[in-house]
Image 1 (cartoon, rainbow, N blue to C red):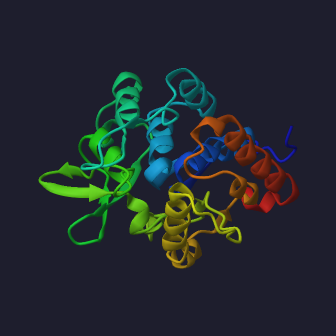
Image 2: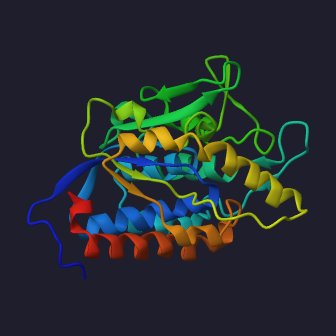
Image 3: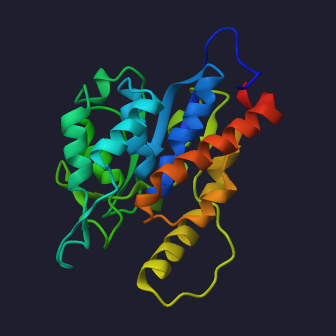
Length: 261
């Protein structure tokens, strides 16, 4: 039990990065803050972070979202498709949102949410915070080549991590004391001839440099180092990934309580 529990609930803005399977760590991070009575007042997120964020902003607790993952296998099982439109499908994620989200638009959410995706034509970051939820979440999570681009109002969108994997800018300057959570520590590379390993390394290298700016917009920056032992495609290890986020953040808040406020 964390001794640094606030007497009254504290609300802070959170930024949740993308990271594929590593996104499950966001649930552990949010759980640790919840134990200290610190809750999101607004969330800006992209890619897998946006999948976690939409359920939290819809009124689910981290425990409830984890239980949902256990029963619906959100992201754990993915459907393979032919190469012409992308290797994988986000159908399981889409169905889980359709079945379990209590609200269908950004405006109805209990907690304000900003979701970023990348305009596939211009390469620019686009912020979604109005209108239908599910298309925006799917667009923000669609890694090119692996997933088909998602069209919204005739414009194709792909993974928001490509244009900013720690999307703090939607919260500036309206919010202070921003807590940024990045789940992609970059460990030294061991050459691997597998396509999967090389795709993953390329993606992580591409997004790493971008966050050097946006992390400066965050008052607190959380990046659990042990997540490096799992890849962005290791969905079957969601329990262990969640636990890393929980343990790391509990320890951080216990040893550095100033991180909480």
